Image 1: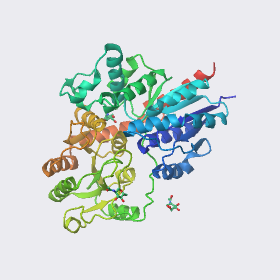
Image 2: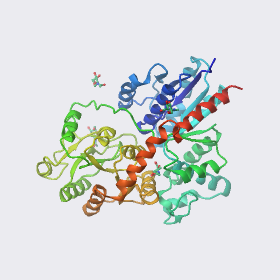
Image 3: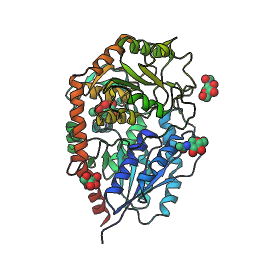
Image 4: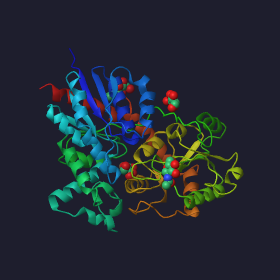
Length: 473
Ligand SMILES: *[C@@H]1O[C@H](CO)[C@@H](O)[C@H](O)[C@H]1NC(C)=O
Ligand SMILES: *[C@@H]1O[C@H](CO)[C@@H](O)[C@H](O)[C@H]1NC(C)=O
Ligand SMILES: *[C@@H]1O[C@H](CO)[C@@H](O)[C@H](O)[C@H]1NC(C)=O
Ligand SMILES: *[C@@H]1O[C@H](CO)[C@@H](O)[C@H](O)[C@H]1NC(C)=O
């Protein structure tokens, strides 16, 4: 009889990490009847989106992916979001032990990159662990590179944070500005955490990475030549379901109204502006964006959110209304031409035929989504990891245009001027642009990677095979 695989997935409680992990779980279980998965979620009292999302996935999940919430613990006290997460993970270890005790024989753990210490639990019950890395191979290779520089050669990594050096990095064509290195490795308060994560990766049996060979051949090759566990490029994993916003007072209209409006626009004519769950702007910046939109005259859909008042843990919320936020008369002048909305179902909007360009903060999930739907991006990077993404997208891969890459670790970037935004808008909306062509090609390549005998399809098959091998001795 064929072996049954019982996998335990431990995601990090943030949508950007949880979604690709749950999509992967679903894909694994629906692909192979021998696989069943228990998906253990740490719940934050402040976050309702995770709940809505897992519920919206319920019908796709079937019986072989069980989403189980761990008991809620006291909210940890921490100085920054990363430290908060570390403490949260630690506090849930006993709950994972309890949850696993009730399961039939577990074959392996799959833990999010930020939950590496959960491998302790796997070890304690003699089960192998794999790491789920929701970002791409380039950033993974940088983590390994920096850890090696530090641990083996005694390099002081924090020097990079203030450096204007350009680094030659083995798997990149262009020199990389030191300041866009992953902040978790070069900021003093975070460095030990980043190093700890990376050392944990090396203790795993292998790493599932949300990328595909056709996109990142050089970095994947680089990783496979390192003395690190095997890499399984299994992407592009993009969300298949959108979380319905449950707020009754969404400014700018309900989702039905948004899509009705999109339905009435010509093909590839609308610019989407959406800055992810952590992106919000001060009033002066909102004004610069408004001016650029009016000046360029393109149709637009703009997801505009309120800055949180405690940036450590909170994420931006919808404005109750845009009164006093947008410049005087902006909404009236742009009636028919564009819409300002609150929280946006980004993937569904990008999938709409009328969307032709996207201004994004360039988180990896957003990049993959826009690529999946063949929509070119103008990069507007808010934080350092995203600056690195933008560097790769613009310089290395030619898959997006640049509004401005802010090589600045300061969490309060300077004002981006309307002219710079306008330039980016015109560039990304260009009908016959080279970027648009490249994005379409990569979109095709990504879809092929997931089909039968495609690179990521084979890689996921290999993962299943390797786990079975590892458990059969
Ligand atoms: C939205 O919220 C209400 C009340 O908080 C709840 O009863 C309802 O089930 C929620 N809708 C969805 C789609 O979850
Ligand atoms: C913080 O946010 C809450 C809820 O959105 C709001 O009621 C409160 O006024 C804000 N506090 C400050 C200091 O802005
Ligand atoms: C890889 O991910 C990083 C961080 O999430 C991102 O900045 C970068 O653009 C991504 N790589 C590519 C090839 O886009
Ligand atoms: C590979 O592709 C085939 C054909 O689409 C599909 O049936 C199978 O489930 C895929 N395998 C994985 C591991 O996703």
